[in-house]
Amino acid sequence: MSARGLDTASSDPLLLTNIGEITVGSRSVRQMWLRAVALLDAQIASADEDGRFDPAPQEEEEALATAAAKVVADEVGLRLASRAFDVGGAGATTDAVGLDRHWHNIRTLASHNPDVYRLRAIRDLE
Image 1 (tube, rainbow, N blue to C red):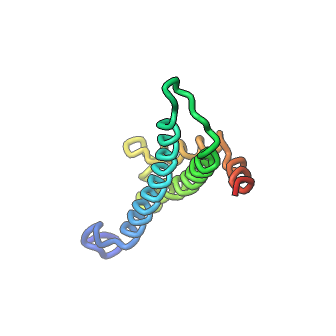
Image 2: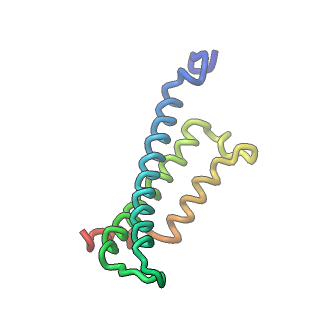
Image 3: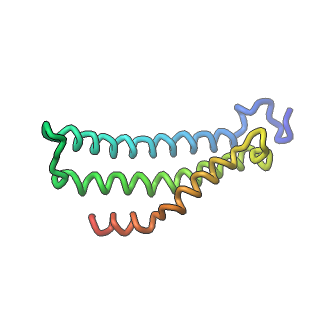
């Protein structure tokens, strides 16, 4: 029996809650990216035989979809990567496990390309 009085990890409500949040969050972000990619694919498919296309018809919708996906991916990604520490504690950061690298990578990408500019663009396009 564990320190929390549980026989198995699969009966730990903290673990199950965190896994559920990670699952829902990652699926939501994935759906947003798939929508943005579908819009971009449709734009590329509309190219003429010389590879030229008119960006105007879908440009605003594509810009909104990709900007929103990036903003949500940054926020949700950081929150979900932090959940690894809620579940694994300090042991999650050891060299053998190394889950802290995911948080660090997400944070680095988010800070190199700040969402504040995307949020302003979204506001301006809406």
